[in-house]
Image 1 (cartoon, rainbow, N blue to C red):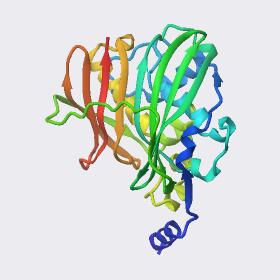
Image 2: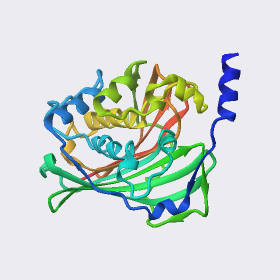
Image 3: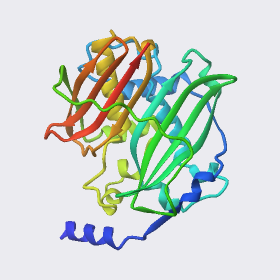
Length: 295
């Protein structure tokens, strides 16, 4: 009966729409202080218990921390938009892909300025696909560039697909794993990650809301699975040297309902690039085209 009620609520929910003209909307700049405390909190929550090499937790900046910065803007997007959109649309964001280029990680992180612009908006079978380009500056120094794609779940696009700048996509590699490792994702991990990173969308922290939009339960943040996989690979392949990372990328291809045991599968590696994917214990791939680019 509960499943039937959930299904009925999903089909009779308020229908949401967004115009393709949204790509033209200006987004105001974000000023952000990435303090040592925030770096520590992020590194701590994504560290794996079984990780072989654990660098001192304050000695590096995890590249996925930029997703927690962009979320401060994305979650409160109407505050930064020249023309606000229906607030309910922002509750239905599901991460689809991530591509981050690191430029200068030695810059002063305490006074970051973050610019953003919508570069793609397209129809998708589950709603609308939207890609945003974020650029991080410390004074005149470019720190990082982040391309983040998401599905506006259940949100219908009005108008034609529009592309202002093509989002880079990671190279898809298939084949047998060179080595595998497990990540334990317990039932409280989405809440701990939300607390430390502020990536606290309702689909990750509110079971009733998650079910109301057709999900089986709350789902683990894709950036959390991705960050934990990077830790394991960096530990095993480059002796925990995060300074060698030039960029990272991945596609989020499935939901992780916790508790779950995730399996990292390293598929191909060289001195310049490591390819991987993440599967659940049932064999479903939740991250494909995982990629770490090295200096």
